[in-house]
Amino acid sequence: MESNNEFEKFVSEMEQYSVPDLELICNTQKELYSDEEMAAIQDILRKKKVVSKKTGDKFYIVATIFCIAALLLPVAGLVAGVIMIIAGIKGDPKWKSAGKKTLVAVIISVMLRSFLYSGGFKIF
Image 1 (cartoon, rainbow, N blue to C red):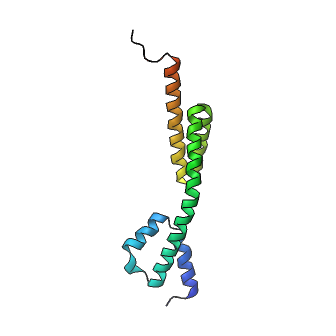
Image 2 (tube, rainbow, N blue to C red; image 1 turned 120 degrees about the horizontal axis):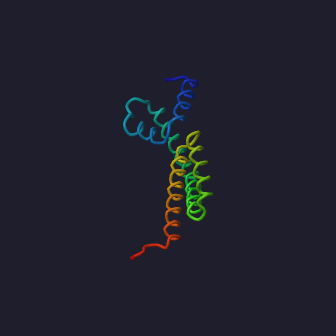
Image 3 (cartoon, rainbow, N blue to C red; image 1 turned 135 degrees about the vertical axis):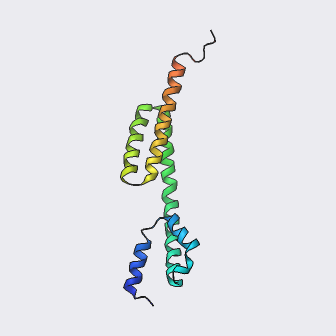
């Protein structure tokens, strides 16, 4: 039986893993851990899923608002996209992905505006 200090160290180490990593451990490596350790891993996984769901909904709402702003105001979208990419490099990679999507929305907006300002399709 492990000492309490070793188990706390194990739990704190497992808390550093991401949700996909913990799911992989639960699904493929059950025989490598004791029942007590697997229960702790499953508990950590459940808590992380609840937290990620709560913060994930807000993140996607904010990212969608930035994409809509990028379509309406390309300069503001460009600034927001660059800031989100920088935040994604330094922190959460979801921001980098959202920043790239915002920059794509900026490019689409600029292309649509230039197409519409030039008069659209001209047959002759």
